[in-house]
Each structure stands twice: as C-alpha cells, then as structure tokens.
Image 1 (tube, rainbow, N blue to C red):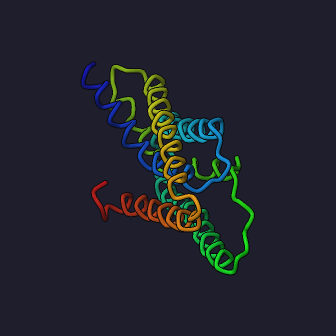
Image 2 (image 1 turned 45 degrees about the horizontal axis):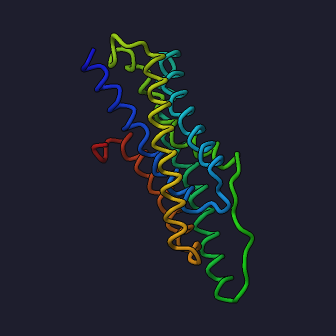
Length: 201
C-alpha cells in the first residue's frame, strides 16, 4: 500500500509539471488576473489532467494505439498555435510601445484556458492503461482524484507565482508575453520528443 501511494504521488507530480509551467505563464502574461480566475485555471488543468487518464483507463488498449499515434502531435499543434500567437502579440506590443502607442490588454478567457488544459493533458491518455496496475490496491478513481488535486494545487501555486513575477516586471509585459509563448512552444516540442523517445522524460 505504501509503495502504491508513493507511486501515485510521483505519477501525479510528473503529470502536473507541464500544466504547472503553463499556469506560471498564464499568471505572468494574462492581465487583470484575479484570484478567482487563478483558481479557475487551476481547476481546468486539474480536471483535464485527471480526465484523460481516466478515459484511457476506461477504453483500455483497444483504441489506445490510434490515440497514441496522434495525441502528442495534437498537443504540439495546440501549444504552438497558442504560443505562436503570444510571440506575435508580444513583438507587436513591443513595436507599438516603441511608437508610443498602447495595445489592448490581453485578458483571461475560458477558451484559452480550455485549449491549454487539453494540450497539456492529452498525452496522459496512455497513463490510463497501466494506471490501475501501477497503484494497486488503490482504486483507479481515487488515483484520478489524487492526480486532480495535485495538479490543482501545483497550478494554483503556479498562477500566483506568475502573477507575482508579473508585478515585479510591470511595464515590460511584452517581454513576458514573448517568453511565455516560447515556453509553450517548447513544452509542445518536449511532449513530441518524449513520445518519440528522443529524450528520457
């Protein structure tokens, strides 16, 4: 039982790392980010990080081969689109700032957070196949709940951490936006490389 608990906690932490990083980026780059919105972001990431392994567990290995062939490419596509848009906006904002003009602030949106949550969790489908055997005798549903809680707490900390950093660099948000976009694209590349076994994580 003790080994299963440790395995579950380590699994939850490893699955939550990408979501944690993106939550820091959100806290860093989204303006007018209230505490309520940070909680909502953490909830989105937590729920999707638990949902995808659960779905993988329920459908088993029958369809997993098809999903595994494409899930990492979907994650890369989504994160590249979001990150690329952030890089573009950051560069545009820097140009406008140099001209003495200001751009409309980028604010929180459910659509953005939804796509981020899907992109960072979709590669966790495959975890569902071996989830029960990895954490026996713990129920898979308890395992999913633990993954959700761990991801939620980490992303909550990530969102607030990003907000604190944003306050420190206030007035240079275009740099943070570009940096955040680059980070999202790199996370997508990392997900693909990990699936193709080019890097050991």
